[in-house]
Length: 217
Image 1 (cartoon, rainbow, N blue to C red):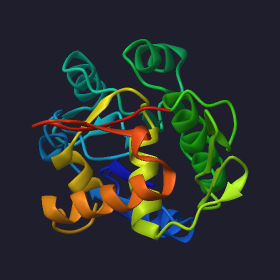
Image 2: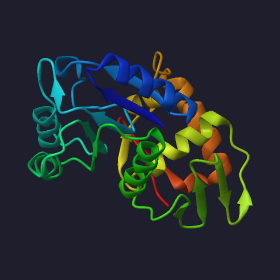
Image 3: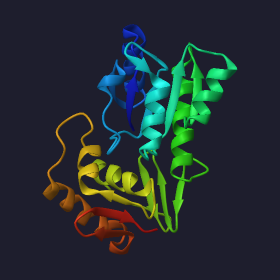
């Protein structure tokens, strides 16, 4: 899982990054609303967003992203505990709202919960026809038989399976497979797609020419 953290407090931001790293979660940390990336594409599995930023309101950023069609799960993390703030955040499009201070374990659990809802799955085992995926365990099964997938192939399958039937642009996949570095070149993405098709069935990954790929369970 790769998250975007927008938090101006240096101590909290650093502590969160270190704690999330221990949970196997990579992250990009920004401290200002003006540093936030453009809404399309937003290269993160989940966003942790503070409401009080030095150059603007996190709520305004949230509203701007949602108006632009950003569907990525967004969790507000804030010291504000008033009901009006919670309602404004949730009504503005946030998927969850956490008041500081909080335990990292609870934060990670809530991130997994919103990601399950985003992927339209009710448990930690994603069921897509006769394909089962366990994101936390890095395990996938086809008709009950374990699949021998490389880490890259597993991550690629996970990114496609998050939104079955939705076309994922090739450029977005290239960036998501290397969230902390330079995006993969398109040739490498095509090689991984080919290998994954061979293992889970070519009919499950459809090419949308000139755009990208979509998962067809």
